Image (cartoon, rainbow, N blue to C red; front, top):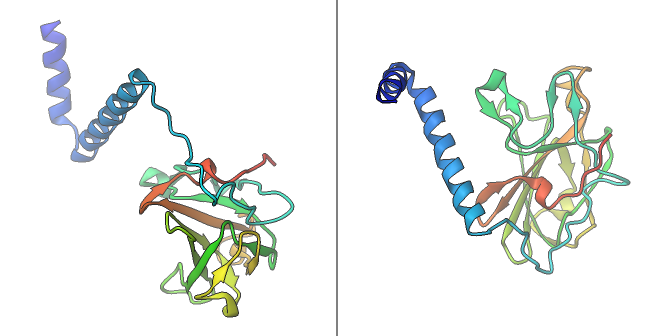
Length: 194
C-alpha cells in the first residue's frame, strides 16, 4: 500500500499545474457534496414572489444542441479550455423575447467588443436577488432603465448563425446570477427537449 501511495505521489508531482488544479477542485467538490449528502442537504429554489420564472420565448423553450455545440450549462467550449457559463435556448430571427420576472431592464450591451451588430440585455429582479443576461437579442429601447413585468415583451432575437455558421442553430445565450453567483439557469427556467 505504501508503495502504491509513493507511486501516486510521484505521478502527481510530475503533472502540470493545470492538472493539479483540476484534481484539487474535483476533490473539494466531492468533499462538499459528501458533506451535504451526509447532512441531508439538497438545493431547493427559494420560494419568493419571483417564482416561477416566466418563459423567455413562446410557445416553448428548447435547448440548443447542434453539430457546433451543446447548449447546456457547463458544456465544453474551445476544445475543453472552458465551460459554458449559461444555457442556449433555440429561437428564430426576430422572435419576441419576454421578461423572465418582475424587475428592471437595466442595460443593453455588446457581447462582442469587436462586433457591434449583436446585443445583449440585462434584467435584475424586483427584489434584486437575480440578474439574468440574455444575449443575441435586441432589447426594446423604450424599456431600458425601467420596470418590466414578468412576461412583458422586452426585445427580439437576432440570428447568431449569421455570425458563426449556418450549421449553428439560432439561439439566445442566457446566464443567471443569484446573489452575485453564476448558477445553472435550468434550476429556474423550464425547458423541453426538442
